[in-house]
Amino acid sequence: MTEASRSLRTFSVLVDDLPGVLNRVASLFRRRCYNIDSLTVGRTQQPGISRMTIVAEADERAGRLIEANLYKLVNVRRVDDITDRASLERGVALIRVACDAAQRVEVLQLCSVFHARAVDVAPSSLVVEVTGTRGKIDRLVTLLKAFGVSEMVQTGTIAMARSVVSEGRSYTLSPRTTSTSESAPEEAELPPGTALPPGTALPPGTALPPGTALPPGTALPPGTALPSGTALPAPNVHG
Image: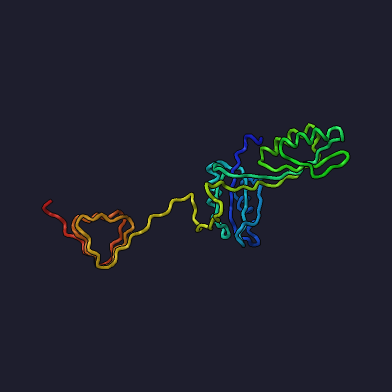
């Protein structure tokens, strides 16, 4: 599968900084057969909390499943799929280019276009450091291959969602709720002695206390369980 045909999604995951958390997250992707393209872990501004940036091969539906399954892990605090959101993404690459003294100037001029810099120079090679997005690094590597790339190492992507106004403010961890599932409706509970007016329509899941007197015209939803002692209204035989 070529780079252009792959569907990559980026997840920003806040986890507890505890032993074994990285292994549990990686094992989840292994069990679900999702290929991890890159994974980075680092500290955050909050003690005891680490941020994982995971880039995985997945379409939109698989991305929702990954997000929901990550929330099932005990030490996962928050999951954000920032693929389709405005975000900042950076990676670092060290590239060893084979070049002699005559070619060195040309390589350095090419690197300056990508704001890369030479960090080590030898008689027959030099090492270039470049920081930026995946696309920027890939373009520079493609151009440097004309001179000869003998060695390369690249970090995984780190990413952070952009915000409108975030200066001077720190985020707080939200409760462990899954954004991909709808919240269940709350059940209504009537206290003992509640007087229902005629024609009341009770919502599904209403808990009726023992001894409730139902006035004529009360609409009961399907599946309502009536407790013992409930007074049912007399049928209208003249209707």
